[in-house]
Image (cartoon, rainbow, N blue to C red; front, side, top):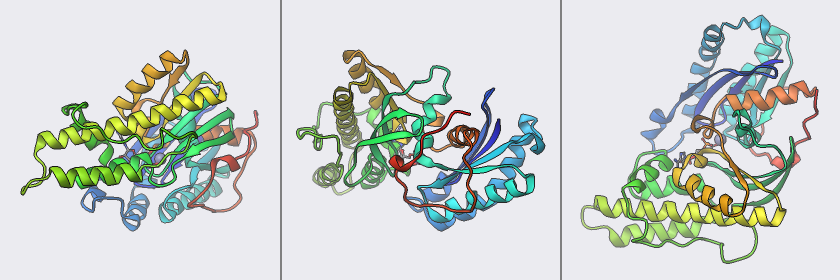
Length: 343
Ligand code: KG4
Ligand code: ZN
């Protein structure tokens, strides 16, 4: 089954073609980062308008470059939540319109399920059951994946998401948006051992996270170390390194605990923060000690993309799922999803 996937939940327009027989056929991405960088964060109304401008031409180009005629498509999948409501509506409306015109089925996909299953796009794919750490700009969740579509939430952030914490820390140091990659880049030249930042909630049992205390600690450190002209470059790099170290260690400690608690031997990292090299390094060391295995998507499929939506949509359409109406949900929980039926 050949499926067109559409992702427009935030500031990336992603499109892709996934075939249940052949795998990923083509994918393309347009990032609005430059446009939003001027405002220091995503401006929802600008995001929606830009999706309107980019989406249809990108689909036409994707089909053209892949040598696929629209008559060959057998289904369409789009992100129906969670995300920015206006941005989601652009993808949902176009997906339903095209499905009507082409007379093919259409299905809405949960954005976080896309992230969760993105590692399945790799040749060396994980097999459920596994523990997944979903770390993006809006979510920090530990999920037990018992099967496709069968998710149990083990823990989540009680306040800021890990990516959001990176973005806010970057803002405090006047680093460009999005903050994750900016902090990570500067951290490479920083001294990881000079400053020690707290590892929130790691001394208490449980699998929930909280990053607001770390945010305040970072803000105070920036204020204390700033001179008349702000922070000097070395101090900035050292703060970035200490901050990244604290987030990565916190996430690693909770993942180790989740593996022990569930008895599972496979860990999957997904979402934008899974692109972080230091996080991957610490996780690799930890799973080796636990005699477990680590999986993550290639870098471009860690952040938002159309391929993960085409993939999950193809599985769900293949299993007979359909969406009857244009409907988006800015908030949705993973555990409400239904099991994906084999075709
Ligand atoms: O999954 P994603 O593309 O979008 C959401 O669904 O939120 O994640 C974006 C988040 C941003 O907060 C960004 O700062 C963070 O992922 N991010 C990173 C890195 N690359 C992206 N955080 C830390 N290190 C990175 N290398
Ligand atoms: Zn995302």
